[in-house]
Length: 537
Ligand SMILES: [Zn+2]
Image 1 (cartoon, rainbow, N blue to C red):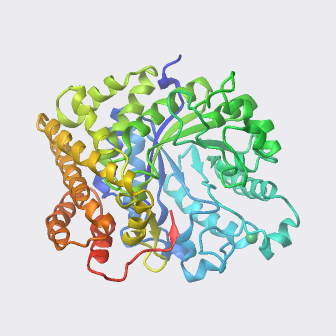
Image 2 (spheres, rainbow, N blue to C red):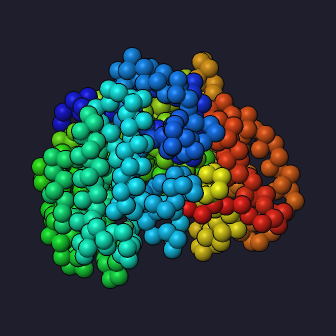
Image 3 (cartoon, helix red, strand yellow):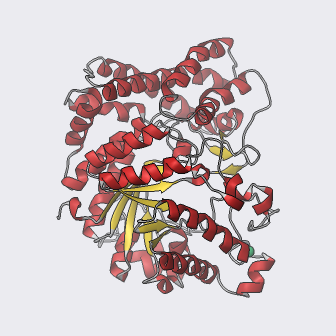
């Protein structure tokens, strides 16, 4: 196998949606990424770009300034890091559509929350072009531009769509919309990129995109080895009667196109990264995206063995299927602090150099980087703390349309979900308690020498304290108790969280960090009405 250094694009995603990094921190992260061998950043500003003119009200209070954005562009270019900006052309736009003056562009509104733009409304095209123009102006040399375009269900009864598209299929509507945005983007300079999920879910007209856009196959579940069953089958998951392991139950077109890419030759196992293999066979230019943080993670530490295996598997798939590039995404709504996601970033960087790299070598390199000792046993700490956890340890984020804050789903609803299988939740909590003890002992062997390492040790200690608190009190909450000692124990943790995360994130973000881990729980314990948002992330 070739070395991953031959991949033209080797990137990491910086997502400003729920967590806004301090400006200095972004600069430090850029330097770390370059040191690890990455050459690109997929930068998702959301409401943290200094939009101006008619778009001014989109920018939140802790948005970067125009000067800072230009400065980041300069720093990245000096470091040899290309910025790939991302502005969504379809969904994930609650931060814009929540505003009164743009709300009428929402697809399905008021039946559904403002989330996606109506693709047929000319105002949606104008909005996208204005946003993208301002972003391109800040990054004049950018080679690629990501148009997003994922996770949307169009409203079949939208009158504007009916006027423009008539009786066209979902695939036809989506592809026409993508082409409109992509061709304009190319006329501005950058090559457009699109997320792949909706194209795979509605594949009839995909061929029209050939030569117009690069598809980014996001797959956060595949690993390095074939799995007993397909992990992801776009567009089929919620159809009645679908059995992932039985292609005879799939829609005929999906079966015809994807069956041979999904299953191994003997038909007994599911191949990792099947859609990349499909795109390669179709001769369609594409990139691969994996994840360092995604849904299912606790709000302290990502589910580690899963992500590192996904990241390494993604590098191998990119090389085998000759992808144009490879990006590790990192979804901030899950809330693990950035440095605690670095095991996967280091795993990816090592796999790019040596695709056959072992887990032990990754653990050793990670321990040297974070703890100042090249001892693989310390590299187990992220895995111990990233063990599966009950739903109340996940953020289950919702955005508040009034304030544009990302808030955790109310604690009683998360508790309710954790009670659905109470035996599993209790078992997970007791495992977490033991893991915290082991991690604490291992951390005693850290020999941090630099400020960078001292900060990381402090953050791992913080994670152990927060997770131990949840592991100790969680069984009582599951039983329905609301003990006063939970509130007492929370006080010092709130202060610690403020101090530790305040060095990384803006004040606005830190207040959301506290709400996710403690505010929502305090509301529940004290019997206050919960504060949570409406639009799910
Ligand atoms: Zn519409």
